Each structure stands twice: as C-alpha cells, then as structure tokens.
Image 1 (cartoon, rainbow, N blue to C red):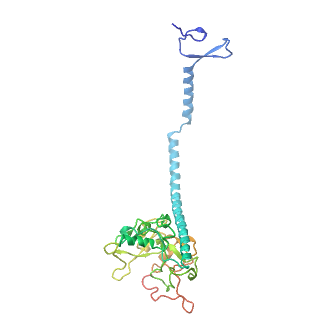
Image 2 (spheres, rainbow, N blue to C red):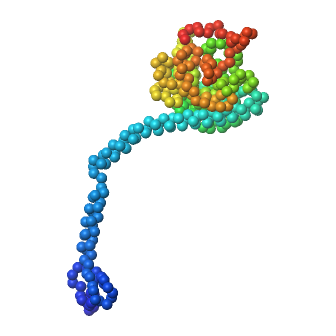
Image 3 (tube, helix red, strand yellow):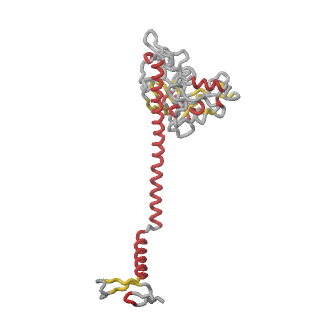
Length: 330
C-alpha cells in the first residue's frame, strides 16, 4: 500500500495548502497559504468594487428620461429629413425623364412628345380589351427610352387621386393606377385669362419663348382637377352635374399634413408642393399654394417662377383676353 506524502515526507491531513519557498529549494523557509481564504478575500473585495460602480434606480430613470426627451426632439427632424429625401428622389426622376424627352425630341425632328411613359393602366381602371391595355402602354412616347416598370416613373410620396365619396379613388397610387406618377403639360387648364397660343406637344423648342420657366412635367398637386363623378362605375364617369361645373379637387403628396385630396380650397390649410421639370431640362421644387388659393378659377396664370401656357399675341403686341375671362366665380 502506497502512502501519500506531502512536502517533507509528511502526510497531508488538513485542508489543501500550497507551500511557497520564499528563498530557494534548500528548504530553509516555507510559507503556507490557505487558497480558500485567499479566494474568499478576493471575492469580497471584488463585490465591494462592483457595488460601488453600479447605477442606482434613480440614476437609471434619469438617463431613460433624458433619452426620451432627446428622441422626442429628434424624431420630427428625422421625419422632415426623410420627406425632403423623397422630394430629392422625385427631382432625380424628373431629370432622367428630361433626358428621355430630349432623346425623343432628337429622334423626332425636334418635336415634343404628347405624353410620357410608364407601365400599363391597372385592370380595374381599364375599360377595353387586354390587348388594347398593353398597346396603350407600348404606344406611349417614352416607352422605348425608359423601361415601363422603372421606378423613375414612381414618386415615393404618390397618394393617388381620391374623388370619393361621389367619385372613384384612383389608387392607392397614381403610379399603380396609370403607370406613372407624373403628368406632362400637354394642354392648358380649362380656364385661362388669355387665349392660349397653342400647346407643347407637337411643337419644337423654338416655339417655347422661355424654356427655363415653361413647365414640361409636374405632379397632380401643382394644379387642380375637375371633380370626377361616378355614374355607375369607372368606365362611366361624368364631369358635370346639371350643366354646372362641379368643385375642383386639390391634391397633396409631398409634405401633406392632412387629407391627400380636398374639394374646398378655402378650408384647405395645406401647402400644394410639387417637383417640376422645365422645358430646358432643369428641375426644381415649387409651392403652388398661393396660385391655387388666390384665383381658384385661373390657377395656371404666369408667375415669376413658372409658365403653364403662352398667351396668343395680337397685332398690337398684347395678349388676347379670353371672352369668358373673369366670368363666374374667381
């Protein structure tokens, strides 16, 4: 039977101890250390240090409160930045549309197109055969210049055209309903103070007197729409009731703070903001609120910032006033 021996040949009988030689291995000086006692002392010291570093409940609540206040201050700013970013996306889209228009003009004897491009009209808003729905898309002037399903045709703030309850809702977005969020300035507004000289489609750049101010492409919030009334379904729509012109509808996409569609401009406290592509190819953001509110019947008259149409000029060099100008409600 083998007997276990400790240091110096003695049998270990107590708790495990480590013998440390403070001089050398000659055996002259030996110090015995109780490891269990060392561990207990170290643990107590660590506990004291950790407790001194911990946060109290009051301190944690104060930090949480400060974070909440900062979040409340920052979130509205972040939201505004996000909406401004979407406007930038639209302006970039319009610049690409402008390049496509210029390519079309170069390929067609400097003649401006009659429209834009985009994907096919949604089935629920189409009233003919599937083949004709597809052909309508392929016949759009810019079909060959920008892919029909490209996001270039899509405004991220597009909220559609809502004429409810009496009319349809072309949505959830104008892009979904008609394949494109943007509108080409193909004809003057129904009411103008002066006789229009003509319209952009079919004319050349030389026809435009001020290309840097003449609007080529816009979004629906830039000008009102005649109210659309459902007779039975979207294939049977009316625009007048008993010979009386119905109210105009106004739309709000970018920076809207309320309903995206309204029919009473006097009660409309929102701004009508739209990105614009001008004939010379540059884009800009404009606020049309004042033009829409001041004279609702004539919302597209020339300002220092834009031109919707060119007036016909008489032999005396003066614009020709329309016979019905300023008639009816202002």
